[in-house]
Image (cartoon, rainbow, N blue to C red; front, top):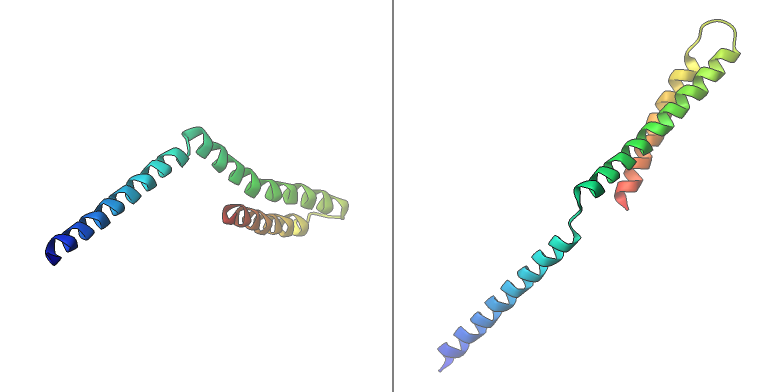
Length: 96
């Protein structure tokens, strides 16, 4: 008599496991991003990375033009700073 009860409990566990997987699959299909959604997400990441770099280049160029002679110290320094800030922006955006 113990064997049929054991068989039933195994079958119930198997059915519950299958139902749980089906629910997970259906939930994943509903929450799947579309191609447009993914494109917007990647575009946002690109802007978040490039914008500080370009702003640093323009600001550095302006500061270099204020001084006498040909120098690129501010330009290079602020481009590198823009890369660091852009990378941090992307990191914190993805982390959320």
